[in-house]
Length: 91
Image (cartoon, rainbow, N blue to C red; front, side, top):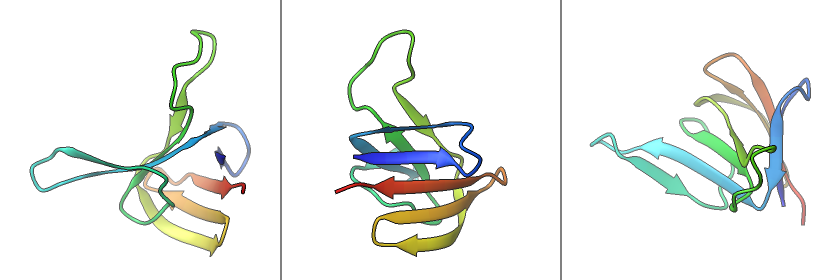
């Protein structure tokens, strides 16, 4: 189970999906499942299945520009928009 939220807890999501998105040289999106945050990717965390129209399915960040803290089950990072996020994995 993964969770991703802004440091101020205002937005985010949790679920079985932790995906890193990046672009190849041809501009095509590359997807990496069960990924950890790292510089140069966008992170998407949430449900791999569609929920209802009342709930979002996942939350995605802007591109990661800096890793602030990185431990085994926790990563704190900054994005290009200046937001600070916390990503966690529970075992």
